[in-house]
Length: 318
Image 1: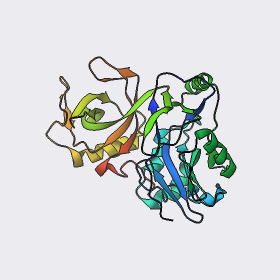
Image 2: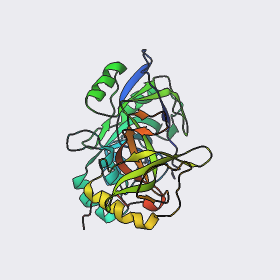
Image 3: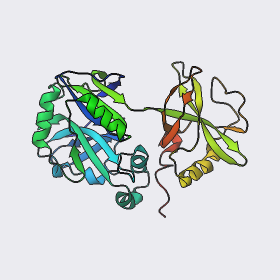
Image 4: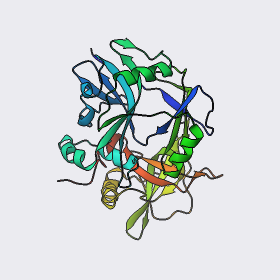
């Protein structure tokens, strides 16, 4: 069977944790969304955008090792842990952003991954996306064989207690799901809600600022409905390593421009180098200011975009 990758069901953002027996609550893992398509002998992995990741994550590319069904599609998050043992988007992007496949054996040792599976939407030749979540969870339990690198996401009845626990541990948040919900392919609705302990977004880099002769901050923007890039503030290197920051500095020369890409150029900022909007970053922040800027933004990782593919896949292992 030839698989056509689907666009997965997405939760909606919420500030309130739903309560009631019809809701379950799961940890929101700070990883990359990956669906595994298994047709009995071959497994293919795709991310939420339909881009194949089979070669990128060979550890989970043999679903017969963790699925007892004759065919299946499972949904989950690939995660990587930092040195403190917490899921790290920065670490998993070292794997997900790789473009040079010859580096995979080294990265497999340096950045081990775990596939956290939370849903089953196809089983033994039949689509079960319209089956209620409660039943899909039971069916997933029937076919999933947990291993060291493949785990099932557990569910809790007390969403508030789970939220407080993940907040205390500095994790991303929780996802609350209605047990009666169907799996809405290429959609989202309030039957799945994400409640985050901190806010994040994917921002476009439109420029850099200098201190002395060194770049010291990124100028960030978001596109509005009119397709204009709106300036939302600037942030330092954040969690990028010194070597990754140097790679970015070297890349600036390839995308610099004399034209400001922002529709609302920031005022009173000196030593600016405008850039073509070819790179994006994941940013966590506390809140929005009244002026429309991010308050206390911190860069988590380069997420890529167009010409940036593979640029920040890892420190050098030549």
